[in-house]
Length: 83
Image (cartoon, rainbow, N blue to C red; front, side):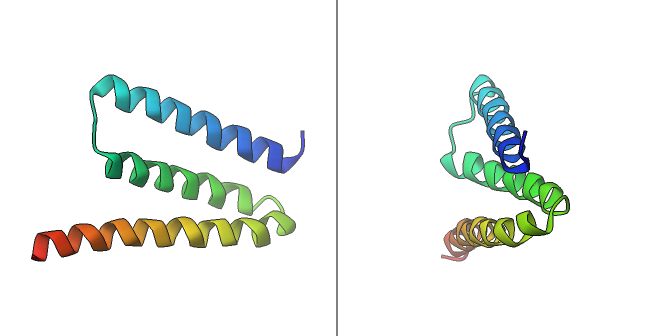
């Protein structure tokens, strides 16, 4: 199995398990889902980025996009608290 197939399978499995747990616990906040998904994807991305130099260059762009989404959600929450 290629490294990118393993990466996609790992991220998909982890996100599926998280979704099932959050639905079972009755969580209804979309922002909570999004932040957890981003944190999980970033953690798996960082683990896989160290396995291959080629993967590191491609996954770093994915990490940047996910982190910007995380910062956007956090900024929205901060603004809503301040206003």
